[in-house]
Image (tube, rainbow, N blue to C red):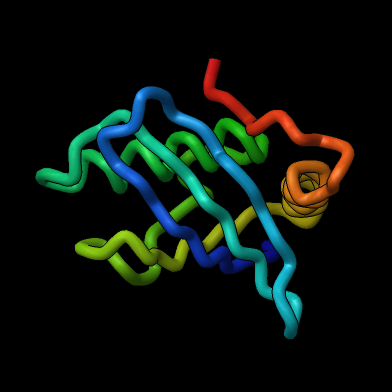
Amino acid sequence: MAGLVLSVRLTPKAAQDRLDCASLEEGGAWRLKARVRAVPEDGKANAALVRLIAEELGVPKSAVGLDAGSRSREKRVRIETTPDRLEHALERLRRLSSAEEREPMRRR
């Protein structure tokens, strides 16, 4: 198993579920901005974030977990999966962060 930790700024009660942008910060940490339609009550927005990240990065939902920030907009999300799937997820993050891909990833 391989792991990756993402810093996420979450906006709940948005018009749609989507990843707005990703950036690679100093030290190799990934930072995401995400929006979900779910309300921040009873963990609904957190569950929606986990689903969104799993779907958009192509990893199983069971591989994504909230490490910190369950009651905050600033969250730390951990992805634990096989090296192949993790490499695929990193490639998706790289594409999202590139200047060529201006359109945010949207949940279908």
